Length: 408
Image (cartoon, one colour):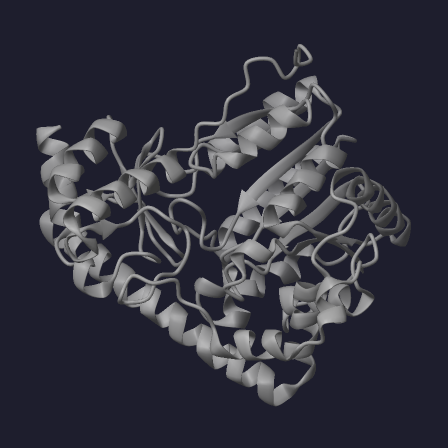
């Protein structure tokens, strides 16, 4: 009975499938014996969901009416202003800005793809990627094409990026590019300042030929990537851009505020043209009404309350920094042990995940089940979640992956 464009759709999610297999093993063997390196949330050293005490305290202090009332379609004005300030910190580029509240970072990505790629056209992102990009493209009548994120030496592959962008713009009048940096999912990679310069140089060559390019920067994990301003320094490069280069940033409360299920984020637009920002606000407000009408008011108000009080904001920052340091310590163990045992990994610079290139990821992950280690098989390799693997259990995981690769 479905429409022809929806017929046969069935969601298969490798991440949740792997997590389900892990949970089944826990029922049989007990949590202490099982290593859960699957899920993209921070678990504490006891394997329980880690939350921020200040976020909980402020949330529980809020009036019921503030939690359950409708929010404006575009989002609470104070929320949108705060999101813009948080996104850039001390690295705000010169230009005009707009924002619209979305259902998490996923909602921001949805709106960017829905409104800034022509139906039937390709959207360009890296081959190592979050698989939901593909789903959103399919859902909105677009298709996803990829460039190789790394060359043979595991450096950022600017040459393949330039070739793929040029090939698509020979067939299309415009192009939407998605770059997930810093703390890329699933690799933990981040583009350097010089690599960002090279990306913008590719864009410059295309827009001088009259092409239109929109760039979406997915920063969902940025607050687990390192020091606040150093990880955002690249954003200054978006100052005074030409009108036919439009930059958007997908912001999420999920990771930074451990508020995953409240589904609150924002899509931010940056342009040298106020007219383009007005257009951005209008089309995305339209999409909000047509998609979810409006989103979680309580979460928006929470973010405003936390950041309006310097003392509370400082407490929140300190607590979040502790979570970041916990994840970093776990990742450091894996990276060091991978180096010592000769396991080749993708360059990790921060974030929730580390990636291991593999020829048969599913077979390797299946072999790891013998060791009661559960990771996520992807097309190009294996994703190990440092966010969910305790410091103690992380010891030995790299060597066991190496052994599984030899025996799979």
